Image 1 (cartoon, rainbow, N blue to C red):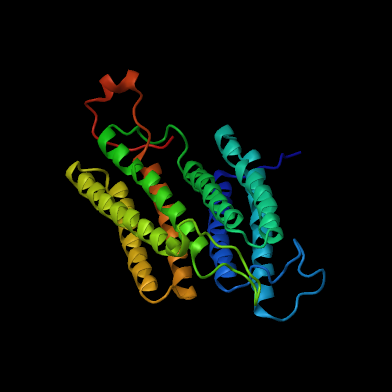
Image 2: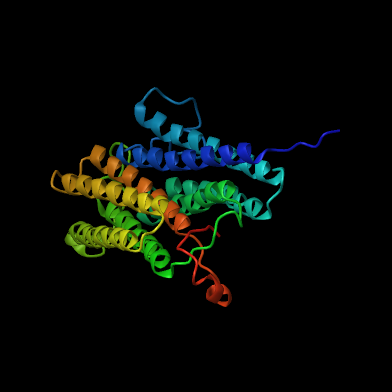
Length: 314
């Protein structure tokens, strides 16, 4: 009897679908908060212990839960595909383990978000966990397409570390952005419900957090441009240059949207676009880091020193 199995191509396609749905959940989750639908379904995981009413807030909130459930099931399907992939790759199996676990954690956090009336700490944790799961999902996509050993090791430490340096900067930027939204005018509360906000610096909290977020964003934009110049100067592979160029362009667009929303009183629609672009930047930076590759181990650096610059993946 033939054993069940998945081809590498099928497993990779499932991983891509899971990654895209994970990113889409960030978009729908942001829509829940920005449309004031956060507590439209005060019970969890059902909605009001009854059939959903026809109001948009309830459908937005419960729809996000349904999409999250579908993403969780797809994550489990990806794990099964990697487990029965032919040939089996243990690294892929381990990478596919985290998203289902992450969704269980997301379910617990989602319940806490509703139970504690959208307190900023729980909402921020809920959002950042989505970005953490995306790290694993993106690497799973990359690794399932680029098996270990099929790409040469990177031999230019300067360009590799320069691209890697973008990740902590973007991480800090994302965290500051969540703090700013935690103090902003869109808590996600439904109708006349009162939701706590971040007030670390009194009445100037939102303004200070937005300025800090903007300063880090400007610095990151400049650093990304300098990394591009470095890649051009060092004659880095075209694929790596193009990935970082895409990061810079999308990041610049995000910055423009951020300025427009700031000077127009933070309208919900523009804030949502800003979050969508932030998610895109996060994914693009991850793939740029993967493209930058894994450096040649020090013990092997001497014989590799004469080789042209290349890239690899862990």
